[in-house]
Amino acid sequence: MTIANEQKQGLIGQYKRSDSDTGSPEVQIALLTTRINGLTEHMRTHRKDHASRRGLLMMVSRRRRLLDYLKRVAPQRYLDVIGRLDIRK
View 1 (spheres, rainbow, N blue to C red):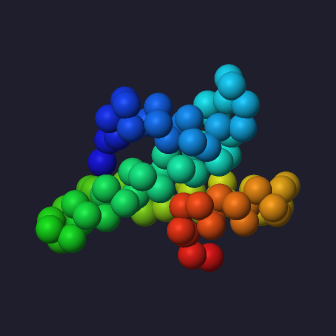
View 2 (view 1 turned 90 degrees about the vertical axis):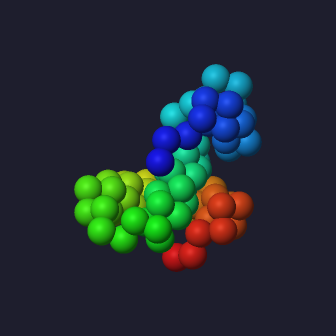
View 3 (view 1 turned 180 degrees about the vertical axis):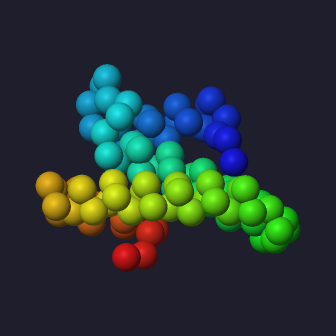
């Protein structure tokens, strides 16, 4: 669900493109992927939590839009991100 601040800073450190980068598509996709994975585990045990399911679907669609943008603008960066995060297309 939410990401601990230390984990978030670690992800930003791994995926940033420059020293002051915190909002590039790669960073946003990495953060969303972490939140999606956490929420997916939550949904495995709480099958009837429809509010969380709605949030999960919104995060997945937001990540999909970011991936589509990255694929359109920089195809090599797109391939690098999906390879590093192990996301299937």
